Length: 281
Image 1 (cartoon, rainbow, N blue to C red):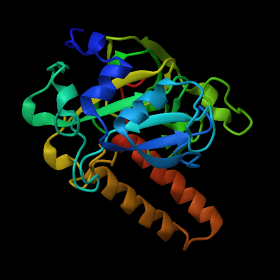
Image 2: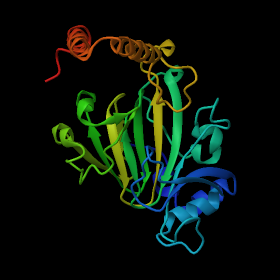
Image 3: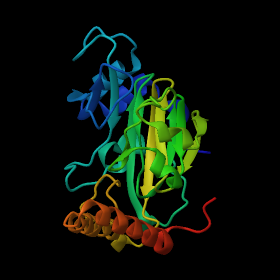
Image 4: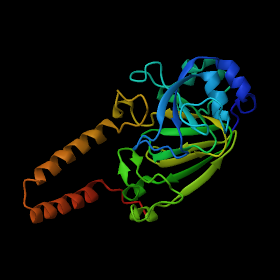
């Protein structure tokens, strides 16, 4: 898509000069596969210009953990507990170079997350609760996606999958993962991928690259958690339903095992009858 001058203009030198030495909080990892569940990375702070230079390198003369460590920036609001990421506020000079595709009403806008990754960096498989565009500005990414209906095979912990290596999974540990249908695409400069809400995605930066994630509220605003600044908290009704389910399961513990098993199966059947979609193949 036509994204403006950013696809040709955003070289390492231009990025460094445009936004200068403002401090940014980054992820630093000694391994390419970052795992949010085991937290195999550390958070560090660097001036933006130095961060960009380091992220573009393969070997570093200056580093935090190792000479071949990987870097990842996911931009944050001024106060991440209260403010959303918006490239127009955090990186106003760069924001002038990019034309965001207008596929939603202005009042539906939620956030625009600026992302910069070292070559080879892989982000954990997860889902978001809002529709979003993954816009590739420079570099190349591989994106692997899984449908929401394959959630039972992805070994979820919250919004994230425990299966870190989607290319060589441990089938002894994750035997059901073989049932998950994989969709794969490659993004190059100027490409835009639409990731619908609840679709799982795993992203590898094949090269040093810069991207922008644009999230918008496709459900009515009141459906979303007002404290969510990342776009990954479950809708309030879903959170309440999960809490009620936890209380119901706690109540079942009062029964002997055979009764608990019987009524748990009845509950599963009722959920399937009342809430499952009928048009899933």
